[in-house]
Image (cartoon, rainbow over all chains, first blue to last red):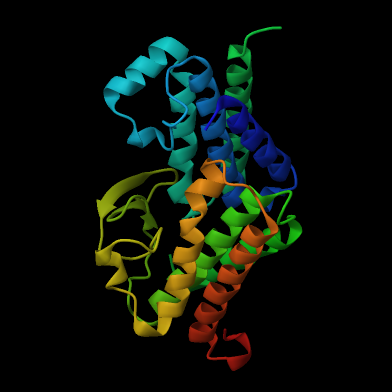
Length: 125
Length: 155
């Protein structure tokens, strides 16, 4: 999918996340993960790191080689951030470990940092 | 998780689902539909004894995350099938009792549009939304019927 479509998807998800309450932490965590993947794909397509038909889905799907490559070109923060949210999912989105609301806040913090980093990659007009 | 925890999640996620607009918030509304449906489905599988109800959380099956005794600790473990993440693959599908076949088919309908409509460019149309709604209602209805035995909650 083209970079601009990824951005539109990320922004739609963020508008929906704004309707969530702290107690909706399962969908906050998962929604943030989805939005982060779209920001990452927007950034990587823009940098020609990945083709339009080759999207990052999960950090753990990427090879060590690709993660090193992506990190050197775009910054390790992108996949590190995605991995950070993915670590929260089994415990809080699919599990019942205490601290779900704090985990949701952490996911939104990661989303904000990834969004800012992705937008900084876009060429200035 | 235990059945009660699945039902608690399904109720809270379902409440969020009702607050979202199926068209404007399609992506999160869809995700809430799939997650609420899977929680009810897992609860029904546990109820029928098809899968194990324990505090081990799905993470790329058969790997589960098991919380440690100390707060904030956990370990990755391989466990017998407990909570399912998706209804796909021969090994998992062989676990599903016939009484849940309709719910499983409805969840597979939901899964079929997951990648194209959430991560891809599939157009969000009224027909897509109606299909997701119908599949969710069917999956949730069958699972609740199994759990409650209430005909009013059946499909």
